[in-house]
Image 1 (cartoon, rainbow, N blue to C red):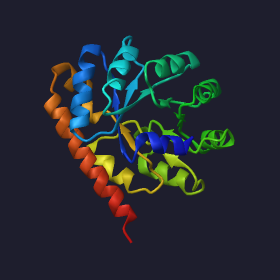
Image 2: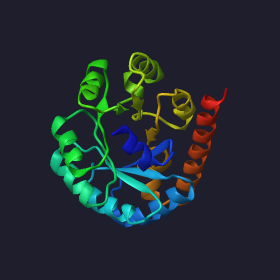
Image 3: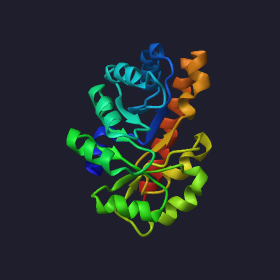
Length: 217
């Protein structure tokens, strides 16, 4: 599954996490993210119209769009039908994982402990979402989990903002960092797409520099 997700993300190291309450904003949001250099986005299934927003953003063509906060197999099925190329869950659910495998899409389950991580590994998953990252110890927890599980790649999400981005991406085990600071609910409600584009471009630049630094001899 991890290799499939690598291919979908196509080298992206930031994952904008979006809670879109107005599907009419989805096209402009996709434009702003893509203009800022984002290659992917996660539309959370936290709103009644999330499926419609995902469909619009997936049709944009400039982003690999996935579904987040997926907690049931039925949601996973609806998300993939709407164009989701990957599925992210806040926790580990065997039925959601099985459904995603059946649908042929990468799934990134949430974990918050070594026990949950071992469960994911037992089921053949080597890419997981560390969630809620900041609330459960942030970088300290991430490094502690990465040390005994060198095969695992993490997508830390939850409470992470621009100030924390470089620190997380300095850890080689981090595949990408998820966060909502690039397109907060307030920015979406105000229609400030120029600010969304600016914040996205800044995050993309920080990510590129951070990943280059950890690869330097």
